[in-house]
Length: 298
Image (cartoon, rainbow, N blue to C red; front, side):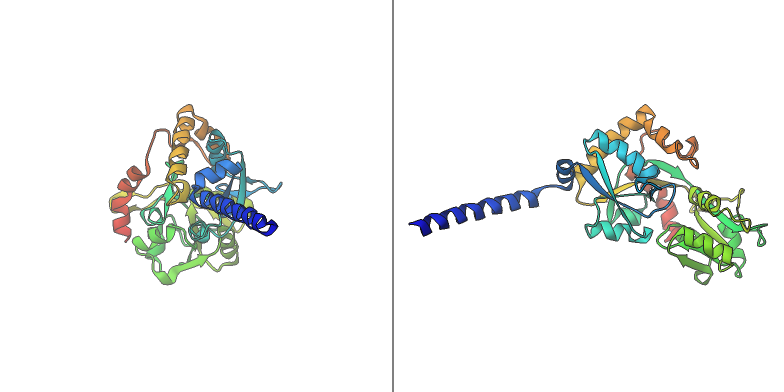
């Protein structure tokens, strides 16, 4: 009799655990992060986009704007996972984190793998060179015109496509793990110039504080496919997290309309109001505007 009672109790527990397991498996990412009150974010530790500060906290324009939006959704905590920029999308697809908060450009090829929220800022490219700009470089086209020039580009960054689209040869391009590594390569003379977003270039040159390098102040963004290159960036979600992304977008637009997003962005020294997206702009609208550019890039 006791054995039958014991078996019944065990059976009930097993069934209960099965129901809990099934309920957990049916839980969406948004429901999970709301229940836990914490979201795990992927960053590339690149100032001022997404990085770990001196106190060990995650900050930067993308995490701080995301933090403001997530707070409106009742999600108070943010846990960072640092990885190389080129590993962010594979990392999220592998389940290492819930969002990417690294200032990534919204592009058609990335949108095939992840879903972006509405744009949070806009930006162009920038270039750093040896002091005195010995090769007289002011654009990607100048690099293409001189086959002796070696151009450094962070692995996974879209700047490589811009460079190749205007004629820079593959053998001229040096792939680097981070922009900090790019600055070191420039100082050491392994490359003749480094390109990245204008914000990142200025930040890395200022951080290096080396008299051997400088920012090209009159750098000109290329016109490709009739479109002047300008990137729009945002946070990214897994492609099966529609409810999370839609809720995020709703609160994002409320904060944009209030001016809060621009206030957060411009609180980081290297950003200005010119980088703010003042009006509502959707991902499909951004991608439509980029279509001619991306067709020309290939």
